[in-house]
Amino acid sequence: MSYEPDRFDFSQPVRIDLYSDTRTKPSRAMREAMLDAEVGDEQAGSDPSIWALCDYAAKLLGKEAAMFLPTGTMCNQVAIATHTRPGDEILAHEDAHIQSSEGGGPGAISGVLFKGLPGDRGIFSADTLRAAIRPISRYAPAQTLVEVEQTANKGGGACWTVAGLQAVADVAHTHGMKVHMDGARLMNAAVALGVPASDICAPCDTVWLDFTKGLGAPLGAILAGSRDFIGQAWRWKQRLGGALRQGGMNAAACLYSLQHNVDRLAEDHANAAALARGMAQIPGITVEMPETNLVFFDLTGTGMTVSEFAARLRPHGVSVSSTDAYRGRACLHLDVSAAMVEEALAIMRMVVQPR
Ligand SMILES: *Cc1c(COP(=O)(O)O)cnc(C)c1O
Image 1: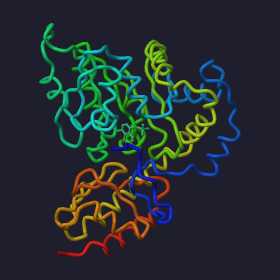
Image 2: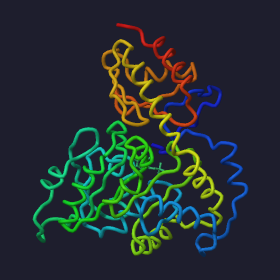
Image 3: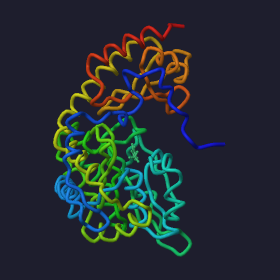
Image 4: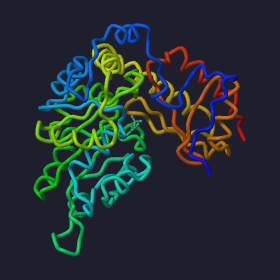
């Protein structure tokens, strides 16, 4: 058994990459921002471009301080490790990325237990959280952290409302728990809800956002919280190998993405809606109507698995991903135009044969 990814078949290029919103390539202008970036040694506090990004992001997120990290996964792991002690329990939606997709990091790195909460579209209610809280006793693990995902990835890119977050955070804080937001697609939520990111994450103690999901940067994520939290988190950043040197080149790309690629996320949401409407008209496909840039669909009615569907799309240069045998995902991002959506729909209509 090898965990190494299969090597991409470079002879079969993908023209319309709906596989993930991580598939964006840095634009010319973004690469130029990287070339021109002033750099130093981040570990020694001397990289001005990273400091500039941290200051900009802390303000954007309404937090005292921020920390640059290479990936969103490392943001989650650093945050969990900083908020908890071994033996604690964290509560999050049962489909949370930290549970399914981070290699068991919370258990392996922080030694914490995970309690999954139910809820439609990746979102749980304050009542559901309240019902999961146990009386404090020496028998039970200490429940110290609640985690929410904005937008909820496996929930179809659904948005937590500010009211929903506030209600959950109130319950958590009443019970002495911290609230951490996995804001991989926080800016998509901010654009879709028409609410500033700082208002969305105000109820949360800590938050991070990803620069490689739809914002179009090649690498990087930012974790924000109180000055005290970020100060403590630096030990984990160092310990996990996330303390950088001339990371300013990447920070410059991330800052560029915040300054140029946020408002245009609305185009991705419109393209997602168009793709969803078109796919819903293909016999046998049912579609979960998107709130943001992720379109989840079910192929049960076609008798075709998502792997078969993907294999038929591939020679036409279209790529989609699967979450289950029959449930798949198509992601919209800045390298997919409205015209490409129409083209992808025409190809989908062609490869799905009515039974
Ligand atoms: C992609 C993603 C992550 C991990 O981010 P990376 O930058 O790929 O490490 C975490 N949470 C959610 C919800 C994601 O979609």
